[in-house]
Image (cartoon, rainbow, N blue to C red):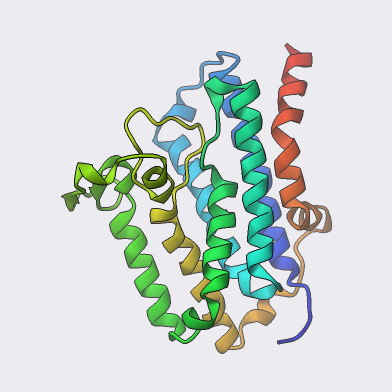
Length: 244
């Protein structure tokens, strides 16, 4: 594989990140400062949020094979998620983040990185289709059902929803609360979809389409997304406190 920087991937990540900052700013205004915005709490707002999440998770899976030491990198992201959990539990327990998106992406990076030698033996198209199917079937597992969105296939036994370990895996215990909850199931399967999409592009020699950049400032944001993620909410809080 050529040692190149796929700048378009940085650009896509940067666009998703700007979208996420806008979404979180709206969340702060609605849920902390009491602004009334019915659309944000509607289906449209939900689709906005899901589009951001899906983009980050698929892109994280796609980019995993591009770097070295995926388990080590995953541990770094996981620890960043742990810092956010500790800070929110101490300073904002009513808005705590437990098993948030960084915890998920770090976990997926470690799992897939450790199993990369096995996963890459599968053909990309079947791997992509199976991963996408598993994501679709388990999408509603947090709510106690197998199925996708409004489609319910069957109920998951309540015994699965036992404690914090099962919560981390995708079966939240009773009264669990987090403002940002992304469990291993179903989201690992979406991460794997991105992983196998990369393997398809690699095998079919389509990676070259990602070499050309989009817009340098946005690419810069994409390249430094972890650091910016760690500080963006405190900056938003400070901005709104000064503003109001």
